[in-house]
Image (cartoon, rainbow over all chains, first blue to last red; front, side):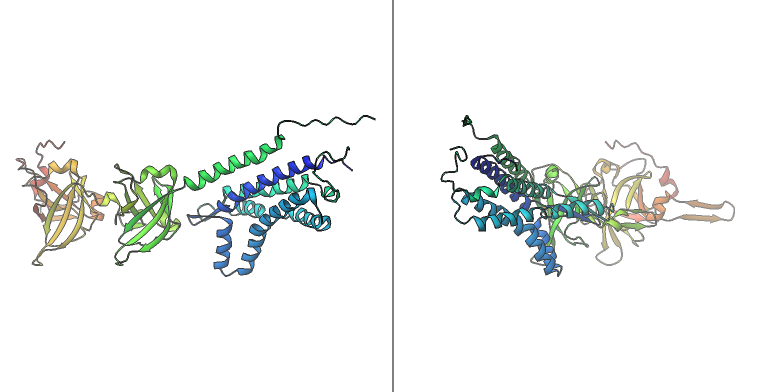
Length: 174
Length: 280
């Protein structure tokens, strides 16, 4: 098994990546993720726009799925990780935290779905004047947020949750 | 066994550059995309003629913005189009800029803007000078069909014929003006046709200038001379237009609003009239 760096350093790395992910979540949700051009008419949509359009189009089921997968889950992941990191130095319920951590780690692999959807649409829907999909700046921010969240979760090792660690420093070579 | 020496750096770990850099780049991206976003303008049209949200604003054939929403005015007499102009096209929103709706035109003398059949109508912009402005009155027809400047005169004719608005006025087959609105005279005996001569050619019109309807063919068949066919230009023949000539002794300059008779056809010598007039 690989030797983990000291918990404090580990957390610093995880925190910094998580904060970067939080920062990128803002443009990911505010900026358009793709621009759909139909018969010469262009429309750029953000994630929230897309959900609303699905809802208006009479597809509340898909709207809810997209809402959960694209809006709720990334936010939820970041928040859960933040809580875990925050509690890590004085963890009194390591089992729950470890489970939450594993859940977030497991969801990570599905989070790039949006990015793939946009990439696929942009590649497939290319009919010149009739219909065209172009990726927007929001999707890059979204991808960065997802990648940074995953890296952050990866940088943190849940073993340290089980170690009594009064101040988080100088552990392991007393 | 030696205990490892633990060194604490005075500097925070370089990994904190990642969130810092993220903050800078994301902040710049947000600023770039949101705060410096498109310029919102309003254009008022008398008729929306099928414009929908999402329709392009174009300048020189290139999209420079798009329509966001269309609102009916309170008195139901106008349509206000809310549109956003791209940042780089901000300079198009000036006091004297003109906006009009481009529609497909099909006629026997030619078809124009056929691309709008597929891609839909769009709003064209022609930049003008002056202060930057946010509210505009849209033109009902393209500016080349309605020069607001220029010498306006009234031509009086028996019939309107094919002299519809937007048709051209020619001097020596050179286009120098446009036909504007026409209406019935007060007594109902004549048709009054507005004619607008481009400012630079305004000096060609004198008080004794003769106007005639140059659309159509003049066919003269005589027993001894055979058939004589006269038409000014093919385009004129198909679309209809007005020509004029000024006698060898040109009179004083025509005043704005002056009335002229519109003859059905030129007399023989009118075409030979070639007075020297300093038009510049």
